[in-house]
Length: 168
Image (cartoon, rainbow, N blue to C red; front, side):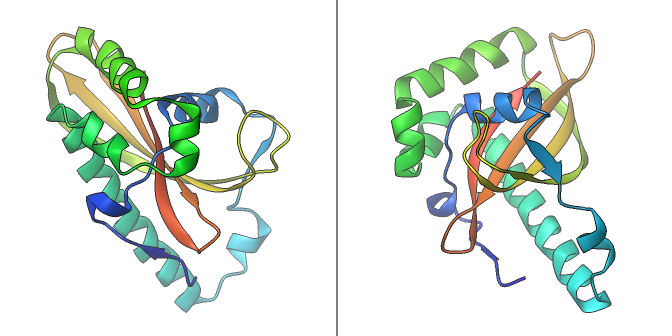
């Protein structure tokens, strides 16, 4: 539980929307971390995990608000080198604009939970521990709510960093 979260924009790093989309579409190589290991946590460890999840959820909310304000490029500017290898700033901005434009402006946004995953690197996802934060969001031009997902990865320096965003 030594992982830290840096909730400033400078610490928000992303790989790409494609990573977030792949996280939704690649169930085979992922395994939820909340297995026997999670059930064997001490109360203190569980409390620390809950606090970490709350902190990451707050950072995820800040990220979607930046995207709401059309500051997607600014988020990308703080991206990790890996992110910049996968998708250009222009392509990332175009992808999010394309995905969000038909939905209209966001209204009510409800948190839907935090999910922990581990990928072994055998699929399209880089190996590592991931956290997905899900939101059920009402948009002005959509007939029904959309699911927004913000994804974080635990970097080698034990810092959780933003790695992707998708909306469906």
